[in-house]
Amino acid sequence: MGAGHGGLAVAHGLRRAGRDVLLLDAHDRVGDTWRTRWDSLRLFTPRDIDTLPGLPFPRGEDPFPSKDEVADYQERYASETRLPTRLGERVRSLRRAGELFEAAVGGDVIRARSVVIAVGHHQVPDIPDFAARLDPRVLQIPSSGYRRARDLPIGPVVVVGAANTGGEIAVEVARERPTTIAIGTRKPLPPGRFRSPTWWKLALLRDRVFHERTADISWLPWPLRAGGYLDADLDRAAAEHGLRLATRAVDARGDEVRFADGSTAQARTVIWATGFRADHTWIDAPKENGQIRIGRHGRTAVEGLHFVRGRFLFAISRHARDVARDVGRGG
Image 1 (cartoon, rainbow, N blue to C red):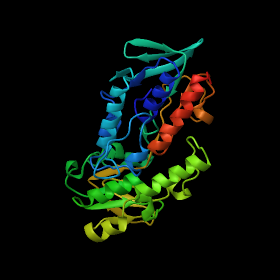
Image 2 (image 1 turned 90 degrees about the vertical axis):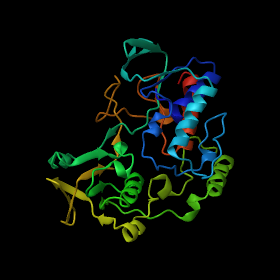
Image 3 (image 1 turned 120 degrees about the vertical axis):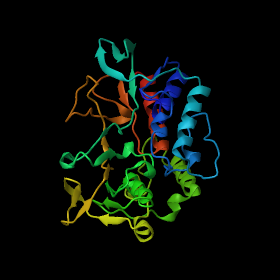
Image 4 (image 1 turned 135 degrees about the horizontal axis):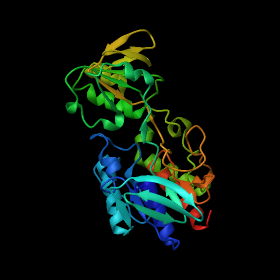
C-alpha cells in the first residue's frame, strides 16, 4: 500500500520473485505525494542515487532533483514496469482474516497473503495543543499544506519548527512576508561536501564494497543520518530579508505566538513544521501507544504484515529490497 519509492521497489522485487502484486494508493496519480509539496522543494540527495531498480533517474541541469521530477519519475516507473495499480481510493481498514488479509477499498474487499505498508510517516501533522488558543482569523496550516509564499494572506507569518522543512519554508516566505521562525534546537549548515554528487557516489560505493548494507545508513556521518544539519541558511535570510530568529514556541493566544524567552510575534499565518506521526488506526494489529512496532526487514507481530521505512529515497529503496526478499521467502 503506497505507490511511492518504497511501494514501487517492493512491487518490483516481489514480481521478479514470481508473486502477484497490486499497488494501492489514495492519490489520483503515482507521484502525487511529491506533487502536492511546496513548489521549490528539491531533494537533499542527488538524482544518480535516488533510482529505483531497473530505471535510471533522468538527467537534469541540477544534480539534486525537484519534487516534480521525483513525482514524474515514479509515475514513469510504474508505467514502464507495468506494475498493476489501483489509484484514487483510500484503504479504509486492514485486518487479518484466517490466512489472508482483507483490505476495505472503496466498496470492495481485496484479499492478499501478504501486505506491505509503504505510505511513509508524513500522515498526521503533530501540532501542539496550544495551537487551539489562536484566534480563528489566524490561518493555520501544517507544512504539508504550504505551496508558495504568494498564496499566504498579507501579514506576518510565524513558522514553528526549524528542521529542514521549516527552515526552507521560512527562508522562502521571508522574501515576501514579514516572517519569524521558532527554533527549538539550532542545527548547523552541512559541510559543503554533502552538496556534492561525487561525495554521495563515493560514499555509497564505499558502503557497498565494505559493508554490503541494505537499509542501514550507519555509514553516513551521524548528524546527516539523524537529520542534524539544516540546509537552509537562516542567518543569511535574517540579514538579507529580515527573517526573525526566535526561540522555541511554547504558547499562543489571540494572534500572537509566545516563545521560550518570553517574547512574542504577531501572526496572520502560522505554518506548523513540527513534524508528523504515522496513522495506524485503520490497521487491526497489536499497537503500543497507538503505533505498530516495526522490526527487522519491516516485520511486525502480525505474520505477513510488513512496513517500508527510510529517511532518504535511496535508503527507502534499499529497505524495500530487503522487505521484498523477506516477503518472497514467506517471512
